[in-house]
Length: 218
Ligand code: DX5
Ligand code: ZN
Image (cartoon, rainbow, N blue to C red; front, side, top):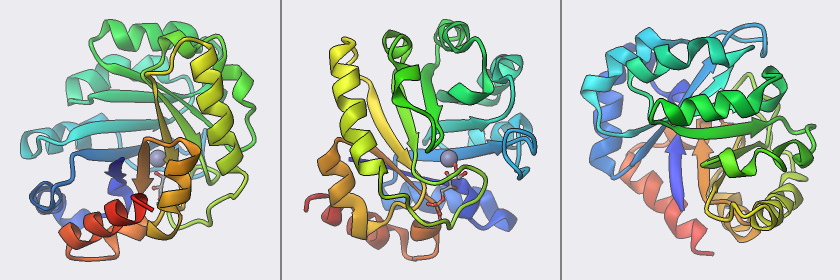
């Protein structure tokens, strides 16, 4: 299991220190929630902030683009230091082209689906995916309640990826993940859990990471 803490719940007054503390605790991924105030009703940050953080961190930068027409910004995020770019199927009419372009830039490519979006949109994109992100809350804010039908969706996503010859793609779950549901999420087939409020509210981070990992073992 990979835990990808969401920066949105970190202390914004001292982000470099937060990143150093995550790395010291053994965290390997960092989830960066980019929101444009159009695709979602909230605004967060963009490439300049990611670029400022990059020299302070060796973490794998997992960038979740909650923005309309994300293809406009791929190069900016690459230059900022992203490792993985995840676009929303609902925000891009030409997702196959965008996913291909992300890979051409030398980055990992991911597709995110809102809770109400059917998995079938991923069927013909599966070969172009390194990761499929299933939203388990409606995107826009951290601290929302986990939507339980996500468990069934994870199982169906695993089956779809296997059938499409993309069994190696990771399944990421984002929203409301916590030690209490980690085992069930992993059992359903998730590989990567994003956690905002259930991670950053609980120091020290090494103990919180251990709590997630222990819970994930079931
Ligand atoms: C929601 C974001 C999530 C969020 C997760 O739109 O994409 O990554 O920060 O926060 P929690 O874990 O608190 O639901
Ligand atoms: Zn996210």
